[in-house]
Image (cartoon, rainbow, N blue to C red; front, side):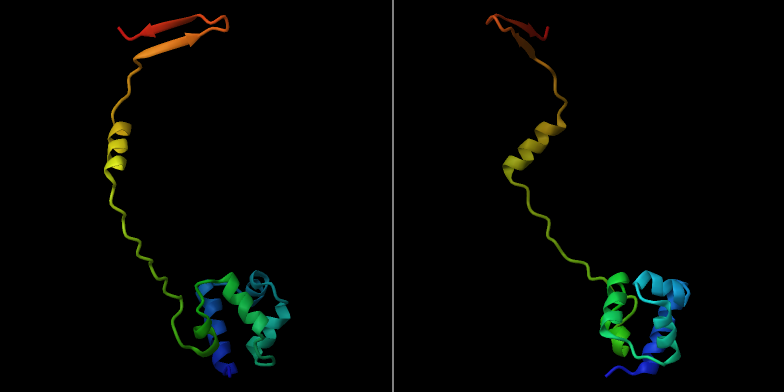
Length: 122
């Protein structure tokens, strides 16, 4: 069960953290401004729909922190470790070729009558 007074305190903390008014917060989340006012006054309890909208709009808000104060805010992002794959001999050879400057050795022009001209580097 969500403790309403603690939830209100966390909601007020969000407003201060993002430095926005209750009405701006309502607009961003996509709820009526009166809904935020009623939540902050303690008249209404937060709905699941409201909580999910907050989490969706502000992904750094930890669901468990918002609901019961456990966890952290802003939510710590976990860095995923991705090992760097070793280069295969073929890959390193291709890389070396790509790094070397290329020179044009020969240009060949083919004509529709079957004849051609070749130009070689001198």
